[in-house]
Image 1 (tube, rainbow, N blue to C red):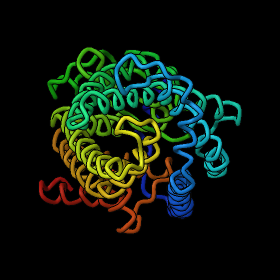
Image 2 (cartoon, one colour):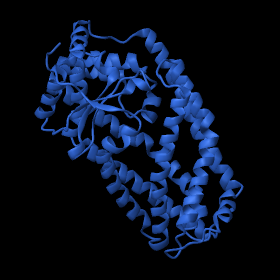
Image 3 (tube, rainbow, N blue to C red):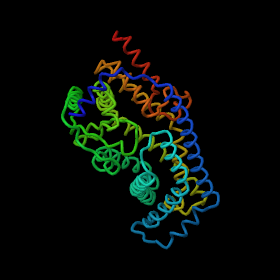
Image 4 (cartoon, helix red, strand yellow):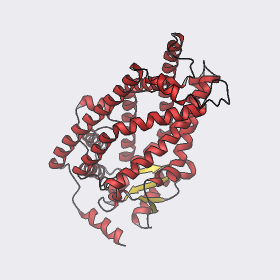
Length: 395
């Protein structure tokens, strides 16, 4: 009942507009975050350069050499595991001060609500989870390097495609609950309208849930998570009491647009293609350096830092291309939200509220958007809504 009263109160307010004071903060915050990202990339590049230049890659191989168990010729799983863990731990320790500065920055701008201890626990959870998943990936890579030296890159890409589909299905029930609490949204006008919106889009959902974002941030978000039997509507609790039902409806309509257009499958496939290109590029270079006798074999564990470097370089090269594709997909999802709801003012108000609340820069520098942004800027999304209203004479 309290939630419905809050929704009615929000609905009676004037539609939100971009707040200039918040935009000034957003621009300052965006500049610092960009510097942090560039510094982070620089540190990663420097670490790899030091490891390769000083031949620490070969030295670390001697450290793990006693773990010589070899269930398959050329594949040393225990060496690979320890080598990977040592690399990741070293990098995590080196970059910990930068990560902590990023956390304090978000607190300074009023976005993070976490204590340093809570932040560190989340960091440890994320590190542990990525360590397990990425260690499995590298075990697979080196197994295939040993048994399929010519086509390993193709098999890895196919396995990663299958893994991406599985994770998209399981993430709402296995991954996200590690970091956030979820609970069903009580039945009421908001729930009923969101369920009806999903039905009109011919999208079957397993329910509408709230995600306890307020325990970590003041930012708002909403999503349609999962695939098949795990698909569900998820609203951040930081959104429910600040947005009208119409505003939440158009935000969810955008998310439904992704499912109507099968964007999750498109993104999984496009990411697989990029992964395939990255692995093939790495394959060419690995064969070349092994031919120069820089390493013992393709499956030599000492090639791991070089693999990191090659995939990182390829990722940076194709990042603008990938971001351009995702911006196009997001534009189409906005178009679906506007077309399916015809609530232009609610869409514009929701985008403005999100920009004000999340400190999103409405008009970022064009080059920054091209290189680093995977969503159109808020300014472009607002102009898209105006153009839609004019085209359909809804203004």
